Image 1 (cartoon, protein in one colour):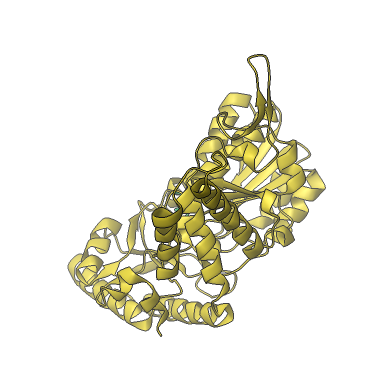
Image 2: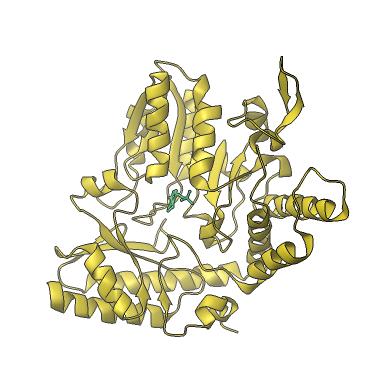
Length: 398
Ligand code: PLP
């Protein structure tokens, strides 16, 4: 069976060439079934009721946490459910960041998604600390050669994307962790674009925080995870207050539950968490060496074909080393929205725009790019359709 056929939306529309998984992936039947099963047989709130349904819902929700922890080599108490990567980074910017003071430094890079820029700017403005930015090379990678000059004894946190959502470049985290360690700083990784491309042992990375979104890894929207090293999470105060995150409440004093509950105030996205657990279970059953090889073959084919299109500029590494199948390009002076619209006429779903990375666009002097993302369900026919669409776009705009 083609992997594509396990995704009902793709199976129902053979003419659709979905190359926008970097924005949101499609969802396989196994995950949809798990969500439907919860909503139709177990739906109730969690951690509250003692009736049969409430207990079933709590078991399903906490079972999903176990499944996610297992998939990422983590402990269950290190998996904090959030609404996504953005919420996870904001959580750290508050719970960890609010202990920082004037004189402290946070380091990010020029290629970050706005969700790994704006929370740190807001923290800078709240706490008066300094925000430093690692430059990006011509190839579209974070320039780790600049670490020595940027990271100092005042650095408290280095926050970087594992894989760029524009250039597809994968950062060498071992070098980042080494630099952070020598400065006594923590490391936060935005893993939004890394997690869809195969299993990962997060604790092995040696980082302190790792954020990702379910909707980019074959799960529903509105659910994500902040993984935090247990000792780190235990030392942090909560970000939001409310139901479920407490041990006891009086008007004089509230004490907080241990992690992860401390960071999950209010009724969570229960069906989303169950969907994310199901997606981890589904991903565990796939042949990842085979999928990675195929994703890289398609990425190589796409990069090779794009290199032959006159007037087209790829924003990102042209080789396959330390990169994933997130491929951005500019076609002459054509606006990326116009290019994406022509591609749509060929059944190709691609993202066009600044990809929530305006500083990176400025670095390269572009208003935006067109972006194609290769996913496990991508096929040669998707690349063919993209190249046909580009032919037309070039005739119209070049
Ligand atoms: N970081 C990166 C690298 C992304 O690609 C995205 C989404 O496009 C995000 C963060 C934000 O993710 P979310 O909107 O799910 O919070």
